Length: 303
Ligand SMILES: Nc1nc2c(ncn2[C@@H]2O[C@H](COP(=O)(O)OP(=O)(O)OP(=O)(O)O)[C@@H](O)[C@H]2O)c(=O)[nH]1
Ligand SMILES: [Mg+2]
Image (tube, rainbow, N blue to C red; front, side, top):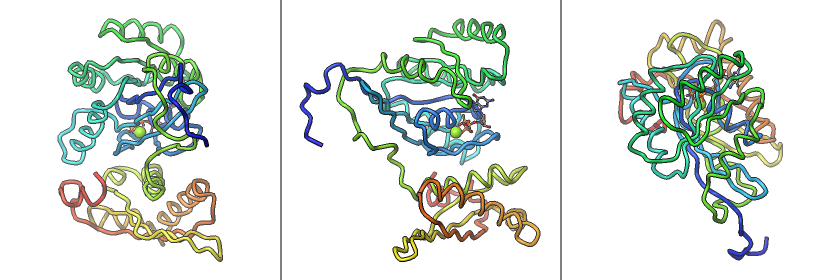
């Protein structure tokens, strides 16, 4: 690539956009959809995302840098307070905020809390009502009216992140509201999160999807070893699933190790797709008593 002069970026727009919303609104699904790659994990259960995840969308005349965030809600547990703080901290450095709301299952308590926390930020807000594949059009119109009565938005759009409906119009609406300027990242940059982090997240996603009750919320995943074996073209990964109690360890392992095997197989398939390589995945389950309430453990697990 030859170095670019500022002149090359005439008419080019670039900026940072935070995706904020109640838990389960579809924020991570939308990020993946806009990127055309899966970098953020998703599940039917709320509070899937725990960290800020950056994703870069490259368009002909613009670069949109998204920050996917954990769902904002009022919760007082140490883990959740950290998670929500992480989401709102994303606000500081962005040019625009995209609020994503679940039109099929509105969450007024969390939405109002978010709007209140956004008041002081002074950032322009764009609203997208998601999951329009699940509700009739007239109900959507009622909701749009109700939202615009709550506070003014730059624009209100209706989309389906899962089905890929109206995603281009949403990108257009965001692009026109970004400042003019050169791109922040090279053209081949998709994210700034390390592969190891995405690997840990893909394992955590399987725990979220394949276990019930409190297990997903009591689990954290760390990757201890990540070794490329040139000769066999295999990547050897050792990872641990940390839970809070011995009984939870038993549930994750399952009868005859069946649950852990299921988690491992599903995770490995995704990791192989991500890394485009053969993967040998070894999973351990460890008990770290009440880690979600322990500041040091929270830090160790990346929260
Ligand atoms: N039907 C339908 N389902 C959707 C749509 N977008 C997302 N979902 C589903 O909604 C659920 C939650 O999606 P996520 O992307 O994990 O939601 P999130 O906002 O990132 O959730 P947290 O990280 O927990 O805050 C998943 O089961 C998605 O498949 C949509 O447009 N239509
Ligand atoms: Mg998410």
